[in-house]
Image (cartoon, rainbow, N blue to C red):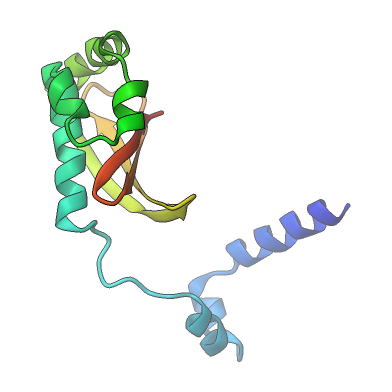
Length: 143
Protein backbone atom coordinates (compact mmCIF):
# COMPACT_ATOMS: atom_id res chain seq x y z
CA UNK A 1 0.00 0.00 0.00
CA UNK A 2 2.81 2.40 0.86
CA UNK A 3 4.50 1.84 -2.54
CA UNK A 4 1.26 2.57 -4.36
CA UNK A 5 0.87 5.85 -2.49
CA UNK A 6 4.42 6.84 -3.36
CA UNK A 7 3.88 5.95 -7.03
CA UNK A 8 0.73 8.07 -7.12
CA UNK A 9 2.56 10.97 -5.47
CA UNK A 10 5.37 10.70 -8.03
CA UNK A 11 2.83 10.54 -10.87
CA UNK A 12 1.10 13.66 -9.55
CA UNK A 13 4.40 15.54 -9.28
CA UNK A 14 5.34 14.57 -12.82
CA UNK A 15 1.91 15.59 -14.14
CA UNK A 16 2.25 19.15 -12.81
CA UNK A 17 3.17 21.47 -15.66
CA UNK A 18 6.20 23.77 -15.34
CA UNK A 19 3.85 26.75 -15.61
CA UNK A 20 1.68 25.54 -12.74
CA UNK A 21 4.76 24.74 -10.69
CA UNK A 22 6.11 28.26 -11.23
CA UNK A 23 2.90 29.64 -9.73
CA UNK A 24 3.34 27.87 -6.40
CA UNK A 25 5.13 29.37 -3.42
CA UNK A 26 7.34 26.28 -3.07
CA UNK A 27 8.87 26.66 -6.53
CA UNK A 28 12.03 28.46 -5.30
CA UNK A 29 12.66 25.66 -2.79
CA UNK A 30 12.26 23.02 -5.49
CA UNK A 31 14.52 24.95 -7.86
CA UNK A 32 17.23 25.03 -5.19
CA UNK A 33 16.95 21.26 -4.64
CA UNK A 34 17.14 20.38 -8.34
CA UNK A 35 20.51 21.28 -9.79
CA UNK A 36 20.71 22.63 -13.32
CA UNK A 37 23.51 21.47 -15.60
CA UNK A 38 25.32 23.89 -17.89
CA UNK A 39 25.48 21.48 -20.81
CA UNK A 40 24.07 18.12 -21.67
CA UNK A 41 27.37 16.91 -23.09
CA UNK A 42 29.94 14.58 -21.55
CA UNK A 43 33.54 15.58 -20.96
CA UNK A 44 35.73 15.31 -24.06
CA UNK A 45 37.59 12.23 -22.74
CA UNK A 46 34.28 10.45 -22.09
CA UNK A 47 32.96 11.26 -25.57
CA UNK A 48 36.23 10.04 -27.08
CA UNK A 49 36.00 6.74 -25.19
CA UNK A 50 32.40 6.27 -26.37
CA UNK A 51 33.24 7.16 -29.98
CA UNK A 52 36.20 4.75 -29.98
CA UNK A 53 34.07 1.89 -28.64
CA UNK A 54 31.35 2.51 -31.22
CA UNK A 55 33.91 2.73 -34.05
CA UNK A 56 35.49 -0.54 -32.92
CA UNK A 57 32.09 -2.25 -33.07
CA UNK A 58 31.37 -0.83 -36.53
CA UNK A 59 34.82 -1.89 -37.78
CA UNK A 60 34.76 -5.27 -35.98
CA UNK A 61 38.06 -4.38 -34.29
CA UNK A 62 38.31 -6.32 -31.03
CA UNK A 63 41.75 -5.01 -30.11
CA UNK A 64 40.58 -1.38 -30.31
CA UNK A 65 37.43 -2.24 -28.37
CA UNK A 66 39.28 -3.61 -25.34
CA UNK A 67 42.29 -1.24 -25.56
CA UNK A 68 40.96 1.28 -22.99
CA UNK A 69 39.41 -1.35 -20.72
CA UNK A 70 40.46 -2.35 -17.24
CA UNK A 71 41.62 -5.93 -16.59
CA UNK A 72 38.12 -7.20 -15.75
CA UNK A 73 36.68 -5.67 -18.93
CA UNK A 74 39.40 -7.24 -21.08
CA UNK A 75 38.86 -10.64 -19.45
CA UNK A 76 35.08 -10.45 -19.59
CA UNK A 77 34.72 -9.59 -23.28
CA UNK A 78 35.92 -12.46 -25.41
CA UNK A 79 36.74 -12.03 -29.08
CA UNK A 80 33.87 -14.39 -29.93
CA UNK A 81 31.34 -12.34 -27.90
CA UNK A 82 32.55 -9.13 -29.49
CA UNK A 83 32.38 -10.56 -33.01
CA UNK A 84 28.75 -11.60 -32.50
CA UNK A 85 27.77 -8.12 -31.32
CA UNK A 86 29.69 -6.45 -34.13
CA UNK A 87 28.11 -8.72 -36.76
CA UNK A 88 24.66 -7.75 -35.52
CA UNK A 89 25.20 -4.01 -35.08
CA UNK A 90 27.78 -3.00 -37.70
CA UNK A 91 25.35 -3.22 -40.65
CA UNK A 92 22.87 -0.99 -38.82
CA UNK A 93 25.60 1.45 -37.80
CA UNK A 94 26.92 1.72 -41.36
CA UNK A 95 23.47 2.82 -42.55
CA UNK A 96 23.75 5.67 -40.08
CA UNK A 97 22.82 6.39 -36.49
CA UNK A 98 22.53 9.23 -34.05
CA UNK A 99 23.88 9.13 -30.50
CA UNK A 100 22.29 11.55 -28.05
CA UNK A 101 23.94 11.94 -24.67
CA UNK A 102 21.39 11.50 -21.88
CA UNK A 103 23.37 12.03 -18.70
CA UNK A 104 25.66 10.67 -16.05
CA UNK A 105 25.26 8.54 -12.94
CA UNK A 106 27.50 7.47 -10.09
CA UNK A 107 27.27 3.76 -9.36
CA UNK A 108 29.54 1.55 -7.25
CA UNK A 109 32.57 3.81 -7.65
CA UNK A 110 32.13 4.21 -11.42
CA UNK A 111 30.94 7.14 -13.48
CA UNK A 112 28.25 5.79 -15.78
CA UNK A 113 27.35 7.65 -18.97
CA UNK A 114 24.21 7.06 -21.04
CA UNK A 115 23.40 7.65 -24.72
CA UNK A 116 20.29 6.98 -26.77
CA UNK A 117 21.16 5.40 -30.14
CA UNK A 118 18.66 5.92 -32.95
CA UNK A 119 19.35 4.06 -36.19
CA UNK A 120 18.54 5.29 -39.70
CA UNK A 121 17.19 1.82 -40.60
CA UNK A 122 14.11 2.57 -38.48
CA UNK A 123 14.72 -0.43 -36.20
CA UNK A 124 14.73 -0.43 -32.44
CA UNK A 125 16.64 2.25 -30.56
CA UNK A 126 19.32 1.18 -28.10
CA UNK A 127 20.57 2.51 -24.80
CA UNK A 128 24.36 2.69 -24.56
CA UNK A 129 25.83 2.57 -21.06
CA UNK A 130 29.53 3.29 -20.54
CA UNK A 131 31.15 2.78 -17.12
CA UNK A 132 34.48 4.49 -16.42
CA UNK A 133 36.77 4.49 -13.40
CA UNK A 134 40.24 6.01 -13.23
CA UNK A 135 40.18 6.61 -16.99
CA UNK A 136 39.54 2.93 -17.79
CA UNK A 137 36.45 1.31 -19.27
CA UNK A 138 34.85 -1.02 -16.76
CA UNK A 139 31.78 -1.84 -18.82
CA UNK A 140 29.96 -1.04 -22.04
CA UNK A 141 26.41 -2.24 -22.65
CA UNK A 142 24.05 -1.78 -25.56
CA UNK A 143 20.49 -2.69 -24.62
